[in-house]
Length: 429
Ligand SMILES: NC(=O)c1ccc[n+]([C@@H]2O[C@H](COP(=O)([O-])OP(=O)(O)OC[C@H]3O[C@@H](n4cnc5c(N)ncnc54)[C@H](OP(=O)(O)O)[C@@H]3O)[C@@H](O)[C@H]2O)c1
Image 1: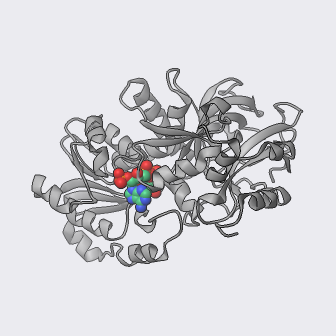
Image 2 (image 1 turned 90 degrees about the vertical axis):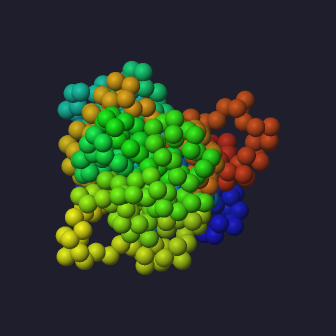
Image 3 (image 1 turned 45 degrees about the horizontal axis):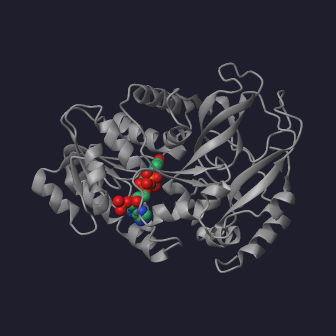
């Protein structure tokens, strides 16, 4: 389906071909299905439920993510699962990659994207003792969180502190667990160390900066677009660097001729080599992303090839002689739930103590998902971009006719479509 195809045609196609129900992935950190399973005991309600979901309908540009309304029949939970009504979800860089077909952990389209969210427990399955109906929780899954109702294993939900908003709750898991595990589990950041983090004004970058401040006297070098420097400096970045107009390696060497102790590299390609060279002896480089592969809304094969070609290639003897550590980090491949829950418990305690607080850049209703993705692609966000399942209220909409908004976002669902709700199989496997 080309990006030029009329939205109305696309929506018609979706009505004819309802989204397949994802089979739960047992190895996933937390499996979410698009519809509740048959087995198990506790039923939330016998009447069908309407559920708004953002569905990736194919790989490509913004128009591939579409708002659909599903009807879920007889939600039943398996033992150990909970049903959560989602109030806010996080948008991550991984979903931009996923939309372009560059995120290997995302099941094939049609699929509901989304790895994190927050909401209220609506039903609990057999054997769930420590969650109850009405609890405000943060929930995680490998995919499937961008919908109003999700089923997740109870041990991938985390009770939210009282003062935490749903938006903040949705902003914690991916960004903060990633930052926490890299800094404290892998790089072992200690007092007086120095850290270079790229994309310092993004979700992970801000989490890294805040966590660095929990350790005395850590110097943070952060690359970001110039317009964001004042904000990230206030947030704790010691030396903001404009990577767009300056050579960040030179800038860092001017301030710290010996380099830095820790480099957190979400860019890949030649930046990984630069990061390695910037390390002091006994320093640690952690590679955790390939943002250099992405230059716009559509897949760029040239950028991918360039990133691949320029990647750091290591000779073990030279590595030994360099006295440096090179690590890789990918949260999606951490399947040990205890590692995740241990990090979350620590992070929620740091939140209660006022030591971390997600910076919410912006919130978009599901029908505005194109604008949300654009904000990240166009490098405008400072902090987390949040998606809200709740429909946008008429009074909040701009002066444009409702029809114009549908055309602009290419993701809104019409009232007509709501009436012709899709039947989604109530089977999980
Ligand atoms: N391995 C893992 O488990 C894991 C987990 C989470 C995130 N990550 C990685 O961490 C990085 C940050 O993720 P995030 O979700 O926190 O996103 P984010 O930082 O909020 O991403 C958006 C910002 O990144 C900067 N940027 C740099 N290169 C870009 C590009 N090619 N396209 C668009 N923006 C670019 C832009 O800000 P400036 O211009 O101001 O720099 C932009 O505003 C990504 O590479 C992501 O894949 C990895």
